[in-house]
Image 1 (cartoon, rainbow, N blue to C red):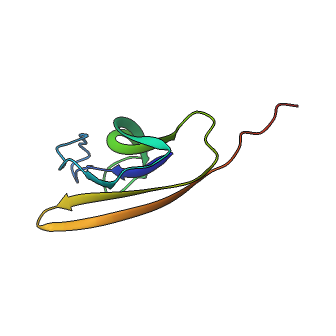
Image 2 (tube, rainbow, N blue to C red):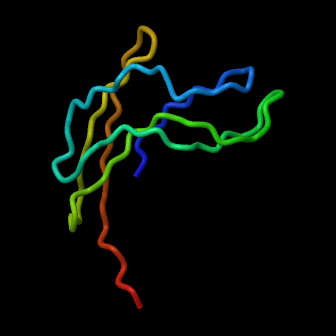
Length: 99
């Protein structure tokens, strides 16, 4: 599950996955892990830029194998001179049984 996606699309249609400040995990998930990955993201057309896929930096939560229940994560992100605390409550449901 993607928790947050850091998009860096320039007005000249350029894009790069960074640089970004490294997020700080204030509360680690008890039943999973948080990973930082580069993922392709769909960006809508804007101005002179066509719709396109660009690389973005994303934080992804993956539950422990066979975990079912609720987990929580708190992430601190700095942008400019402002720090934002993002809190997530994640519900993991059992996988559907194959027919």
